[in-house]
Image (cartoon, rainbow over all chains, first blue to last red; front, side):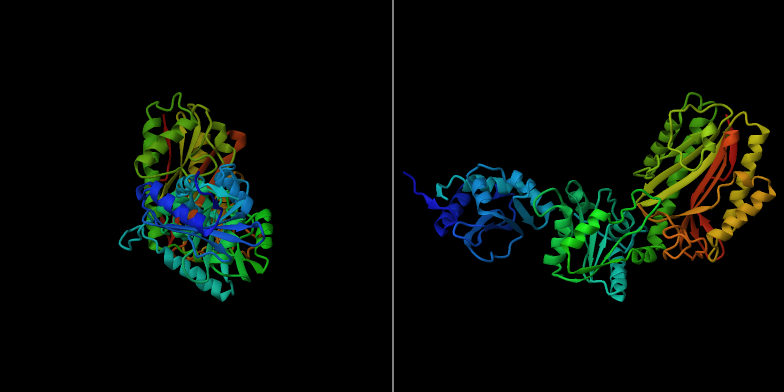
Length: 133
Length: 407
């Protein structure tokens, strides 16, 4: 039986980095250097949490979670915990969440659009982590 | 890949200097940020064709940032002189609708929470002028509630009125391109070529010749190349082409438009399709004489009203004043800058040409004259970009002024 991780725990982040590195080679990430902070509002127990993901020339270098202000990132995506959880459980598409205003993007959207497929690729990998929400 | 600006290019425009000039005026007026939305402002500052609803945010110092519809942002990052960090997109997504994208940028990236914001409002004959709508104004006021909104369009209007050498050269080129359209049209019409040809087709023949000569668009929103024939020539000064076939005995008006690096070629030429009656010839000779007289009087210091007086005095002396449409010009600049003459909005009718505006050296204008006799089913139009000089003017389209009888 595989190990289950608590969603957004340091262990979950560590497993996420491992899986992203193993399953998405740099060329699949178009050798891009970028960073993204997902900011989760209305978290269980209250408060805000973040998930930060960074790449250097297409290599995943950082997957970090925490509370409060996230590290500076090229893009910030803000939404409720439950919205992000639904996306990670593949119950809702990220694009639909954006188009219905459940997620709010901050950053250069023209650039973000070029990275949309990459974000989907990352989400698919992260959704394979056995998680407890 | 943003376009590189090369001062050795004859069509070079120093866009960063234009932005600096706006910022100096902002400082004088105590503006912390400028929110431009008119096509003329976007074109003049960014030197790119920006057809979709867009906004340029100009901070007190530093580069401007364009916000445009998401479908066009990548192209504009490629074609404007700004890099992709300064060409942003808006779209119907959370945080990315145009109000949120622009106001978040002002608050979060420019780090402005309050101050004086210049915006653009007014009215125009030009449908696509691009003033901030009431809805946009209201929403921006809500989103930027610490800001005082100041209508500041006169900054760009004042700065753009005198044309720099690169702009003038672009207009010269656009005008010579239009001449190629007229040459092709004449060749197609003569020796009976007009038979069975519609207004729309002769407009297309001119368009193809102009595109081959370097034009990218017949930019005019009132029908691209405006064509009228027969009785339609007497209907006034807006003539989108129709499928009417050109007939023997018609007057024919060809108003061709070309665009070269956002400069606008605009030259109208007229013919009589043989056989012409003596009365038609009389009307045609009147019109050519009126155009010659007006062109001879354009110079620095002339005003729209003095030129109109020259035209009407001559028309009265030739007994054709009833057929002359008052006014002899409209303003012109890079794409989106059309119609109104003068920068200061202090004429007798707000947002209309000031009849007492005194032309200055290196201003440009379209000499635009219309002769219309609907009762006789005849009319003519003359348009040509002019550069105002100290003692005269440069007529940019070189196609010979005449109303020939061809058949």
